[in-house]
Picture 1 (tube, rainbow, N blue to C red):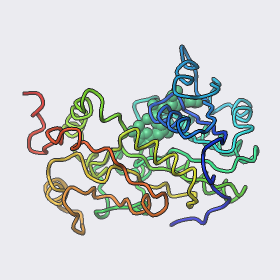
Picture 2 (picture 1 turned 90 degrees about the vertical axis):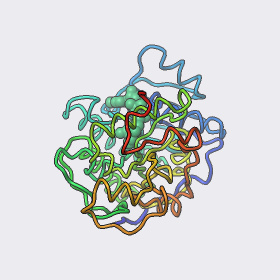
Picture 3 (picture 1 turned 135 degrees about the horizontal axis):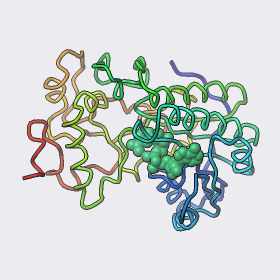
Picture 4 (picture 1 turned 30 degrees about the horizontal axis):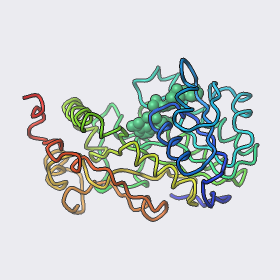
Length: 321
Ligand SMILES: NC(=O)c1ccc[n+]([C@@H]2O[C@H](COP(=O)([O-])OP(=O)(O)OC[C@H]3O[C@@H](n4cnc5c(N)ncnc54)[C@H](O)[C@@H]3O)[C@@H](O)[C@H]2O)c1
């Protein structure tokens, strides 16, 4: 179910003051770089540490503030004076901490950033949700989507702290945009990486490893991915487009990282799940809302780097020979 939107997005980012929480991270630093290139005045709020301020400066940020998103006083100070907030700070996945740490950083942190943004009169908040908001990929049980292609309205089946934190973020976005009339957009990022690193071989090895380790999880994600520069483009598009506050919008490269055609891959790995035919290697996840609500289509594709890097479900050891 979509919830009606409140407030108005930015009409452009040039000259706007934009705070990026988690701006020292993978997606955050790419967002800072792109916003600075587009003429925005960008500030970073992140945990800090050695050289964090220098890295933010190199990416194009004017200021770096060290602090946790779980500290309301510090968050309120950092948010003050900005036209928009891109909220990416958090623990990205189950390997980054205990369940308690993940849930606290992601859920309390997101609530406080959204609340502070409302108090400060910020126009727009873009927040990081995840393809895991459905709870399917990280579920410890052998659950599968109800159908392919699945979309943002797929019923959630959650059994882990990270997916739960992403659902909670989407619920917070609905509640706080309703309460304060603040425009918000969530993005359900899939697997995000710099897919061009080392000529694409780092990413190619990664997908082969995860396909071997947990083929069900990868099938739940529809074998989706997104290059980090495309993730930044989608994030910046979200600043300037009015959307419902939730559900988060699925963003991904339009084709899978598999060599197999998608219908063949689905027949092979999840034969019991109902599906409508998918063309060629198109992802079996709907990207309609990304196109219609954000005008976003990803452009960096693994096959354009090197088609030999696409993963063959029947031969996941090809790069090791
Ligand atoms: N990378 C992916 O594949 C992916 C996929 C889906 C969703 N996401 C989401 O996107 C967001 C950004 O992910 P990323 O890949 O850039 O992760 P990342 O780990 O590279 O960056 C996260 C940043 O948040 C900061 N951070 C962590 N806890 C914090 C706290 N309490 N206070 C302030 N800063 C804190 C970290 O220092 C780091 O710089 C996260 O919310 C993540 O859950 C990422």
